[in-house]
Length: 112
Image 1 (cartoon, helix red, strand yellow):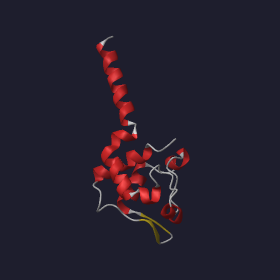
Image 2 (cartoon, rainbow, N blue to C red; image 1 turned 45 degrees about the horizontal axis):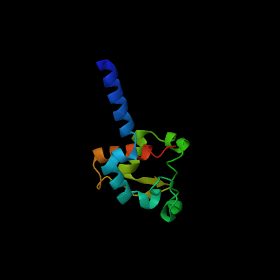
Image 3 (cartoon, rainbow, N blue to C red; image 1 turned 180 degrees about the horizontal axis):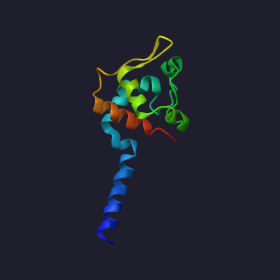
Image 4 (cartoon, rainbow, N blue to C red; image 1 turned 90 degrees about the horizontal axis):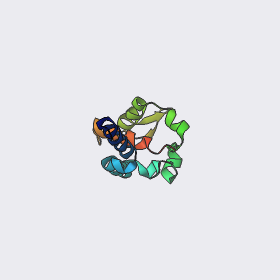
């Protein structure tokens, strides 16, 4: 096996590992602490609070495609309002920019 092939296999292994929720330990903990009460542990939004707020099902590829990373980060940091009503509170004071990016990457793993 050539060095190039070894490098390619190593990079593939890293990519596969990073694509799994287990690779997002800190983000998973942040999600469980701040997001799961509405968005559910599995991202389905199937919680009492999630149903009341209209949380979307992040497992749905169409839902995931409906917002850009920039929009997702803005929602995490600034919250979400609709028709002047708060749908999701802002977490800008609770998470850093880096943590918000990790949360978004973790949320993207819910897509089936």
